Image (cartoon, rainbow, N blue to C red; front, side):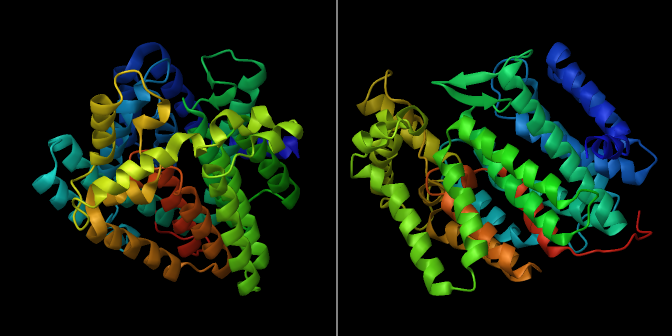
Length: 435
């Protein structure tokens, strides 16, 4: 199996070597050198290699984009460069034709208008509304073109590079030859924060399951099983309860979908179990089982303190519940609140809202949230995979309870969400002459 995997890697050696050049160029030369290495994407004559490389560069750069310091800090600004390159390249390949990104355009327009009209944060915040549509344009078009060209090759490409990325993260646990982050014993790998690593692994878990079910890759079922175990190990190392429960919601939904009443009961019970830590102290029980370090019982009593933040956020939402106050207002508000009422030295949970629904209501109100829900409804309705679509939706909705990842598009998660929906919606089985 290992030799076969290396044979598959050789199919993408041009993209891999180029990615490594960008990787080390950014580490040692910074943002400018990494940008220069990306620029040849504009001029490659082989269209298939161009789109494959663009797609992989985009995903990996967004994975590293949360690094605000250290050797990978170049990726934060490089996200905008690769987005611009992607738009320019795809504009020459009928980017707007049959692009699923138009289903998120209503939300993007509403978010941009609200931000422009009401936000105290200016142009940067306004651009965040536009970015939902732009990121979706690039990801959905890449998925469409690469699946139409050769579905098996594209599926194998995704598996190959995700496997390499997560194997590297696991390898760095034992041999940290480059800078990695650990926060209170929680492993963050190349992501700069543990929850980020856990959630990227969680969404990747759903993506590889979609590819496995389509049965159009060069990997067998044993490989997919091992890959899923690797992802679960990384989630455990990250200590991300959100990701653990997200994967559980995904697996339970798949197995119990035909028993709808039982599924509803189990999912409601999971929500109860996940949120009960906000009202009941389980520290003694968990300590007696020897799990106190992993489950972080020092913060479990108040759900890592997030419920305190949610009470404050709900009170603020009531002041402008229909329109909100623009993109990025959620973090602006909670930081302003903390500075005013708690002082400069305060608990970590007071630096974010930690709930996608509350963040969206703060930013774009009920009207914006309704437009965002329209996108999710259309993706669900268009999916050709009737079982997986529900499981993936549950994973996304569940993980949004305790993370504000839906309130931004320039993070590592929204591109993976667009990718997973695209794989479910676009169904191609044979090689085409499109590219």
